[in-house]
Image 1 (cartoon, one colour):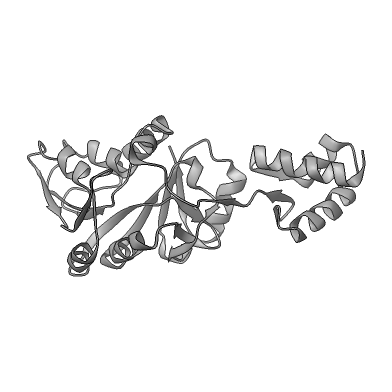
Image 2 (image 1 turned 90 degrees about the vertical axis):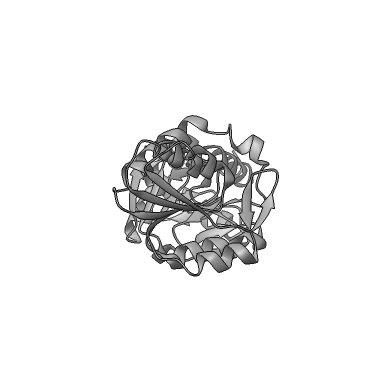
Amino acid sequence: MLPAERKAKIVEYVRQNRIATVAHLAKTFDVHEATIRRDLVEIEQEGLLKRTHGGVIAERWTHDEAPFSERSTTNLEQKVAIGKLAADLVEDGEHIIIDSGTTTLHIARHLVNRSNITVVTNDINVAAELRDAPKVRVIVTGGELYPSSYMLNGMFTNHVLGTLHVSKAFIGIPAIHPKHGLMHPEAQLVPAKQAMIQAASEIIVVADASKIGKKSLHTVAPIQSVHTVITSKEVPEEELKPFRDAGVTVYTA
């Protein structure tokens, strides 16, 4: 196999599998590890993949968010499990923020029978899930309604969030990276998430496997601002280790 052909196949393999070690690639392509390392240097210089200690990962980007109706059914089992685990971290008596999103919605669904909790949200769907929870107080931020998702956003939302102090904020995000932190493709949605982070003593990010290791255009917050990430068991440990190395507690559901 010619070097150019091998490098093309390496890129294809890693993009399909998200991550690979030098040893595994050497065995797969029947060449010495030194050959793979040289290939990876050239591949990284071309901007096609990103080298890591002992291996390589695919650089993945989020350029936009899918419509709410599509996101609500994507990776549904993961989102339900993540939501349940996140709800278990809420203690009676706490004031919390639940961000708008298709994963955070499942946190609310698992808080219905809890006691003495105050939930602040910018999501009409979240508020509606808690309407029959007699021992949960719900505060809706107000703001401009996004009809497709029932999210509230804008100046009024940011103002209210800036006046609050809560124990925990549960943040949904389309891209989270161990080096670049929380990111979002839509600039107009960044300030509300930043205000939530500023309002909370503890930041918990909920993200299914499709969000982990991704990059996007706008920075929401550095990874150092995140205390906990809750994601899916489908994420390889090699992708979770950099988050733990950065001081983030990682749970898988």
